[in-house]
Length: 470
Image (cartoon, rainbow, N blue to C red; front, side):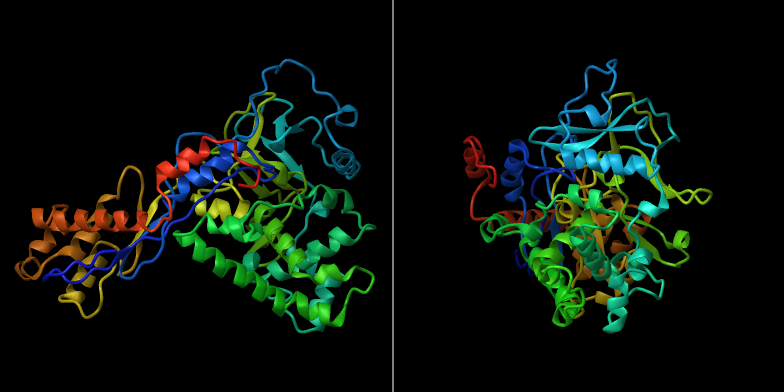
């Protein structure tokens, strides 16, 4: 960053950022996606003191779809029992769903493309408002189910949080859900075993990257962010699952169920495949995190879809708000996330993500001249010191720009009242504009210089045939 002197005050400028590669819940790997990790890496950076620009990602054009368009839409679908492209575990999973009364065979079809992953295709056309999939309540994994299981009993016996308070359970119940999922996976006699067998064991989130792969993020905020995230997962493991392991509360299962490796797998699997729903459906006040078989096979797309509980049937339903034609891949919208969130939660990023932005947390020190006056001006604009603003490819919105103009205002501009022009939607002065843009440009140049390689160096590497795990 750059230190800006003079009576405008002192600014320290830096910019952490986020991003990397791959996409699809069951993404196995694709060369173009892996190459994007190199392409975005040079736009990630680190640090920040007073005026912080968090560079999340600038990516090239593309789509998140991992399937080629199905051209033969008029051909009949082959029953899953007769399909040669489905492995035995998947066939047993679909047979299990059918035996449990889940009506999917006239709705969706599992599709697998070699080297890319799996998802769901429409067996018929769907109109806006139609339900694409309905999952019976007895097939769901919920915090309430975990509480009532042997895992929940073990948590209570050893004084661990079983989330019985009914508060927001999207985070607090993660250790309970993770241990419950691990036991389900290892319990070969459990009714959910066909589902457990198709859950991917090799995940692509940074939690499972090697040290060498993590070093590719050097210079980015994600580099330190990942370290903190990993430490948090390890802390949760020590405070819960390891306690159960010390007492070997499940002697019929291998001791591996208490390992950090299994906890990470379960934690990341839930993070990537679960849905956060209104807890009122389960008789609780806060949000609840649930898993639903087959619903977790939808890949992400920038589409209009949603999900809810049908109070009449108790089914977890996923429905579309747009048209899907027969044979088209069905997508679910994983929400409006930036690429850092997609990478950490699902292990992929999306090119041309419309929700990517450069986050700007703007502030000055309390000892700077006219701090209180500038703080009051920012409040009138609807912001406080340190609020984060979104700088998209189209630029900052007008109010965010005005906040930064306030921070750049000189003593004379504050005393004369010129700075209050922004309340009328006007700029303060030409020199104020120069201060604003010079500070931002210097910050970005300084941040890019922190990377060990240049963009052109990475582009030259990408011309080569890269190994699978690059």
